[in-house]
Length: 356
Image (cartoon, rainbow, N blue to C red; front, side):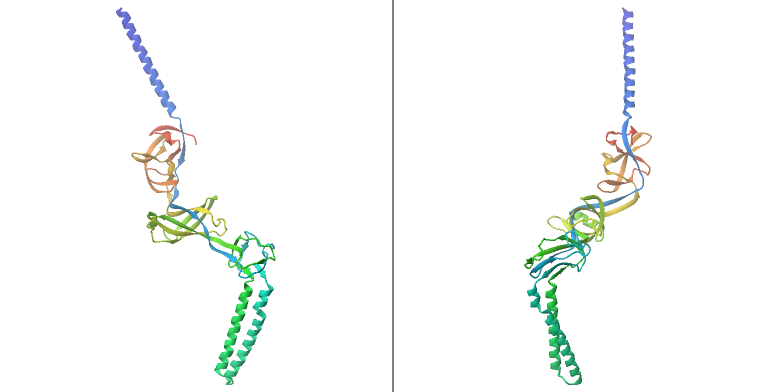
């Protein structure tokens, strides 16, 4: 009986040993399975980073005008000399281009331009005659001044007639683009003060903005601004701060400013809603990493660096930053390989497999 118990105990210990060995092998297999954590990496190279303040707003042209007729008359839209066709929306105009002409015979007759021109010629002749006589002692000073007064009045009368005739011709006051051109039938008589054409010069645009008081110390006139157009996300323009108010609104705690944008090729349209990035600091040849890969721990900000297929957790100190990127001033070196995808499941010294 005793021999039987000893055999049973030996068999039991043997079974436990087999289970222990099997368990160790299972744990080892699990450890080996754990190494295949797929990740993507980025090799650190010298890069540049800009810190900026974002603001949004609508851009407006620096010059615009709506031309109206100052007299009634028959309406005639003129031809664009560049195309030979009547002026149309989107046409570029040069200062002095005639856009519209008016005809009104009664209006022209009432001006009496030819008569006033002839009257000026007569007054000039009379004045020269009186001046010659005065120099020779044949006319009094009073007679000379009376003749000069008549000459001046004739000049004013002719100038007024020329201004009245000029109202019959509508010209572009500056270089720009036609953005509004109401339709009127050629030859129809229009009453005064009708809108004829709207012209904008948007080779330079401006945008007004408001920012919190805390940003005032970081912004100055002539500071560079990067412009991003929501309608054309791949198109980037640049402008600068042109005006800044030193006053802080007691209601909003904001200050106001204006920025101007050079738009020589007219890529940005008046009325567009844009994002402006006011560049406050810039640094070149530094370590820059994606902001999204930083993991916050109790020890601080950390990232994972690859060392011989092992992910090593590094505590970093950051410098300049923007919404997408951040500068690392301590904790990383050039040529380090950092994990940019797959880091969410990693721990310190995790085994990894680089897939791209």
